[in-house]
Image 1 (cartoon, rainbow, N blue to C red):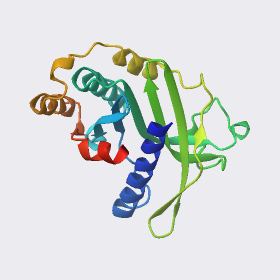
Image 2 (cartoon, rainbow, N blue to C red):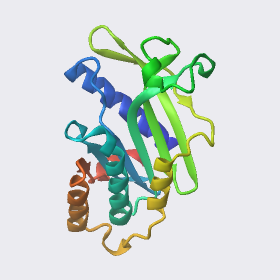
Image 3 (tube, rainbow, N blue to C red):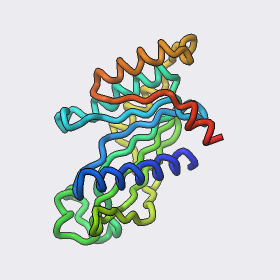
Image 4 (cartoon, rainbow, N blue to C red):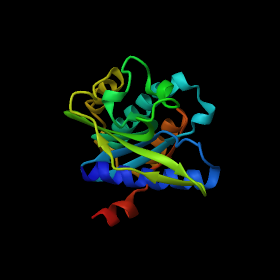
Length: 202
């Protein structure tokens, strides 16, 4: 839960900054946080302004594969914009939430945080509303029930995390730069010098 908490707080800061700088309605890009044990090994952000929507999740899976093989990531936290139901009994489950957003007050915009390990998946939503002055107000997170987080996409991530990495070069700077370049091919900007962040975490 500490990993999820860090992802939530950093995402809220990023969303608030993006709104302040770019204006209301500007979505947060897809973000990936790669973990090895309790340490952050890399953070990657997708430049999806240049990427077709239907191609983005494929790129996410490929980036996670590179993080597993290159950085020995054993867990990944994926952050994206989405919609959530404050009261599930008040929504039509057969209609995508994005299509109900304008007409149904129970549907809210949110940041969706998906934390994936080989043996567990946790998903939560952080509902938010915009306020005057390019501000964002966040409500308490909503945790999805266990078992509702399974999907082909999540299964693909778990499969990537079971691959056996080459641990020999993991902490070599040239190797890590090379892995970052490989991930960048999929449209991500990668930051992998996590020494300062991890020191603060400790």
